Amino acid sequence: MLKEFATSIVQGLRQRGFQAYLVGGCVRDLLLGREPKDYDVATDATPAQVMQVFPQTYAVGAQFGVVLVPLPEGDGAGLGAAPKTSAVEVATFRSDLGYSDGRHPDEVRFSKTPQEDVARRDFTINGMLLDPVSGDVLDFVGGREDLKTGIIRTIGDPGLRFGEDKLRMLRAVRFAARFAYAIEPAAWATMKQLGRQIEVVSRERVRDELTRMLTEGHGRRAFLLLDESGLLPHVLPEISAMKGVDQPPEFHPEGDVFMHTLLLLDNLPQPCPLTLAWGALLHDVGKPATFRVAERIRFDGHVEVGVKIAEEICTRLRFSHDDTAQILALVDNHMRFGQVSRMKESTLKKFLRMPGFDEHLALHRADCLASHRNLSAYEFVRQKREEIPPQQMRPAPLVTGDDLIAAGHVPGPRFKEILGAVEDAQLEGRLSSRDAALEFVRREFPL
Image (cartoon, rainbow, N blue to C red):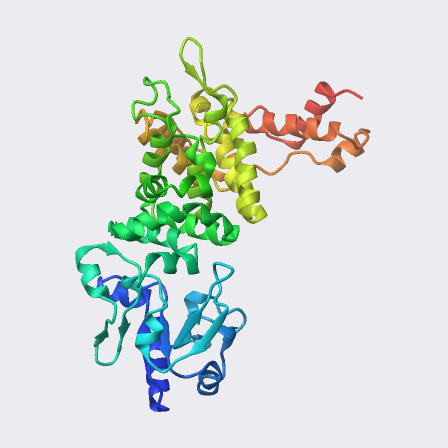
């Protein structure tokens, strides 16, 4: 659907005498036989001219020559928000002059040739243009050859390309991991030299790039490259600190905390939710700070410490409140699976009905597969979830706060204790009616 729409935009611009091509990552993916997630169009039409041809547009970056053309209503998107995946980005051919802030060009000059436009782009594999009607590829930068040989190469001097936008160093890592490509030696050397400069990039952009690495299915290779390039200490020093932190071999034959974490990333489900990916990355982030050797290696309190460190990371990277809450819950509860077979029925049911529990279970499975490979707790939980009916997992309350007030109790902190005790007895099957629950309250919590 989106490809056909992008093609219609190209045709619509050409019918009015403009040049227009598909460009960038969509061309790369099509040449690799992959389905692109989004489509971009490059043209010599100015933003004003594009908006004349397509009145329903969003001038998201008109000063840089960029507008979004949304899918028509009824084709998958309305005109209220125009997310990138339901719109086609149309950009005017341009050259960029100066990047004093390390992200945005100081000056944009519109141009008339696709050759000049692709010269400003990041990597050769992202610098090709495609005529969607004839199928012809315009490759002025050697991108097709680099696709064949598996090379991530900057367009032009890597020092200039990375200097223009420091985030491109993370993008090089992500593409190398996603496609199992090598980073060209000169670009690799430049990344090692300029790695510290990644700290000037906004935290939101760093977060989003790291999230893509974690959720695209190649997180282990991506974080190995981040480490080898020297970028990791500048984007996530807490993960870099895991290197060399030994673990008890009887539980972790795979090696140190860093290696365990990377192996765990290999075992995440695909597609992987953002919160699960970050919960997996951070689940043992408290271990370096709590490492000690007694009769064996121990990490006493690593969960509590890990939650605090994970919260600092989520705050620093400006995750949403909801995402932060789920990531912290994953870190906070990942060790509880070792106790599931010994939990009281009420405790187990409350555990199993936690919000987003599928992510907790997926993290536990990946954690086991990256260490001792014992899935007995995982199978126990799966069986319990199948056996326990929903109405027993989350039964309707037998008594309420109004019932307690009617019985003569004064509202206050004790209400939570009483209602919790009634719910536990109900979950354990000791109470099944309102009358029995009220008698329980009278007996256990006398006025």
